[in-house]
Image (tube, rainbow, N blue to C red):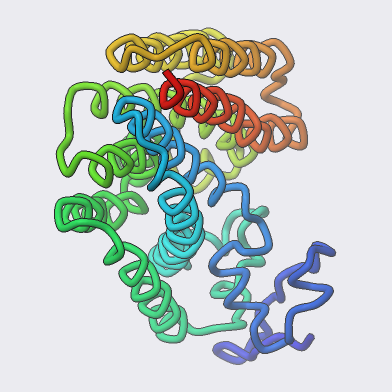
Length: 316
């Protein structure tokens, strides 16, 4: 594929990664699919996990499974399209910075495959799809979902002003921990907020691992992150963050009166997080990426436990 001339120069073209987008998608659609990260769906899965946790935990508390399959399906679609919209917004705001970082310089906008205006139009389209999904819920859930957009809009700018942008990411990526309760009960109680707080700590932890891939480039161009803040103390920081996540999630399960299946799911989740800390080498970028991606499996372990607990509670 030939680069698009920009200001008399030829912009770099996004590298082929050999995924389904490069192999099967129509050529015209590939830059847009890459903008939405549909070629790299791990972020969508991580956004989805708190949604599924809250849906399963709320179903168990209500002892009603009727809405759980529908909620899980709606959250699945919503997570993928809204993560796509969020990534597109991030690429629009970071288009100058992305060209200076090795891992991001081949993204569609700095590579000259799409313009910022084209990306914005694509983002609006994804947002309307997300709105269509949101409108399937009750009015309280709709309002709760819309409120998250403030955090999503602010996130790309945080890395310029604070070493804790991962907290803002956690606020956004954990919002689904509120949505299941909003959809089930049309209100938010203490259980929902404790689950939300636990998810935030989890997100800050796993995104710190992810950020170590870009630590050297970020340092050179003045981008801040918890990876740079923690440095060689990352293992200790992860012990605190993941420990806080497990403690808060366990508190949510206790408040929700979860049964053994829920606690087994949390135990499996905990073992997975501990294994990440043990295996982590912050100077090994491929390993950092692998451990970051493995958090989808950690999240699924907890969800399976919560879903089994919901089923068990409806049978008592």
